Structures are given as C-alpha cells and as structure tokens.
Image 1 (cartoon, helix red, strand yellow):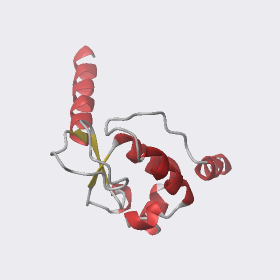
Image 2 (tube, one colour):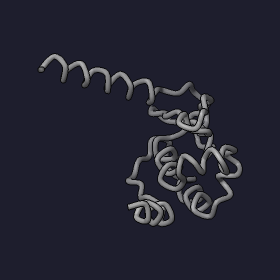
Image 3 (cartoon, one colour):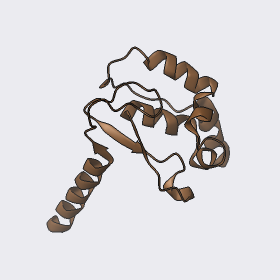
Image 4 (tube, helix red, strand yellow):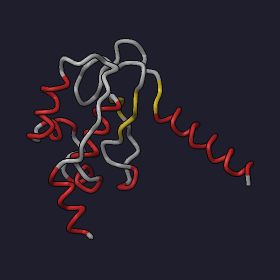
Amino acid sequence: MQGRIKRKQQERASEERSATQVAAPNVTCALCARPLGARVEWHHPIPKSQGGSVTVPVHPICHRTIHAAVSNHDLAERYADLDTLRQRDDMQRFLRWVAKKPPDFNAPTRQSRDKRDAAKSDL
C-alpha cells in the first residue's frame, strides 16, 4: 500500500514539473505579453478534451484566470484565438490589472460569476 501511494505522489510531481517549466529568456506570455518568470505553464488554446494539441506559454496566474473565466467548451468554440479571448470585458480588466505586476506575481484567482452561475444551474 505504501509503495502505491509513493508511486502516485511521484507521478503527480512529475506531471507538475512537465506542466510547469522554466522559460527561455525573452519569452513572453501568450495572454498578457509580459516577460515570463521562473514558472511557466502551457495552455492549450483548444483544450485537450476538445481535441487540441497546440500549447502556448503563459504565467500561472494568466492560465488560472483563463480557466476561471471560460469553460473548455467555450474555449474550443469561441475563444481558441487568444485575440478574441482578450476582447472579453473580464479579460480586459484582468490584463489592465496584471500589466504592471512582476513576472513571478501570484495571487488567488476567483471563478467568474457567469461560470459560477452555470455550475449552480447544472446541479
């Protein structure tokens, strides 16, 4: 039993390392265009669950904000193009707010009201 738990913990740690990598110098975030810091996450503009395979580098806070605001289905259907995603009012507010933050800035991310209401109606 102990070995199985340890293996799962090691697998999880390996997945986290592959999802969060160090960026090359002078690389910018695909969403906010700020320079990337020590932590980089790779965002699928079309989610893997919807058949996407292409990834772009983003800050962890930008990645969490994308997924807090938009469902995977909507990302695939309406917002696969990051320029279109940036046009959303909530994303514009976020981009203005995060513009002057340092590359490794981190803060809690709240789920959007629309997405929260949709989740409640599914119950």
